[in-house]
Image 1 (cartoon, rainbow, N blue to C red):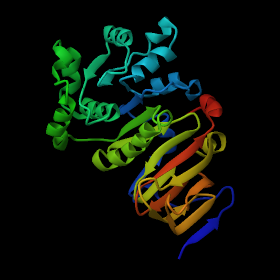
Image 2 (tube, rainbow, N blue to C red):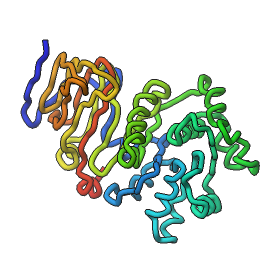
Image 3 (cartoon, rainbow, N blue to C red):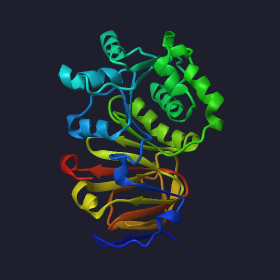
Image 4 (cartoon, helix red, strand yellow):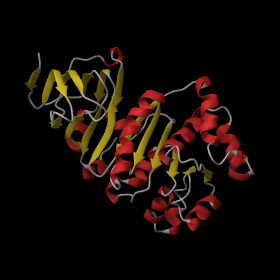
Length: 311
């Protein structure tokens, strides 16, 4: 039987994180733990409210997807400042990045990898480059030191070939991946970004993927037990409303703990219009969800307060 339970504004949640299938620390999307982390910039204007410089410094590897290099170049208008923010990779079919921008970053040491295949998006090509960077035995060293055209990588689908040949032998660990400019702009590209949350959870589940916008942090809640932890101070100062969004397919939220409106055995779908929006966290330091099939979650962030928040 379906249940909806309205909670007080602060409650204690008794869920042991290590006993659940999956958990994330909400702050780790903004300040990742360890060195396996990457910031991916897509081809939309970088919003000044995001605190870009802090995000850049928090992540270890930086990648521009094609025209994302234009956006990085334009955002950093001062030449002295621009030289401090050189991406490790620029990847894609390179039909959007301007020649002068590409030349500038190439001269400053960025590794430019062209992949002309039209059967994959620049987003997907970048993710595969990152996978090879982190887990392939000699990929990063090889491309950094290669003097061959396109670093010796077939320009049509060489990255896919490397990924396909090596993937099953990689010893993978969690990689924190924050994507800027994934949501907004052309609607079809926004939808593609949503599909990538589902695709990566299935294909490359070692990625903890988050999309940051001027208003939200967006990520996938995988099926089974899923615990989201955070500091109470972070909740009080930086977090607003949240939504549980069945964008992949209809599903049932078996149980939640720590939301203002918790539910049990609650069916949800876009078609029915039955969607948990404008909910919020009330668990003092965590929230627990158990869903039959993955759902997208958005968490509203107060970016002004976030910029001054001490992690």
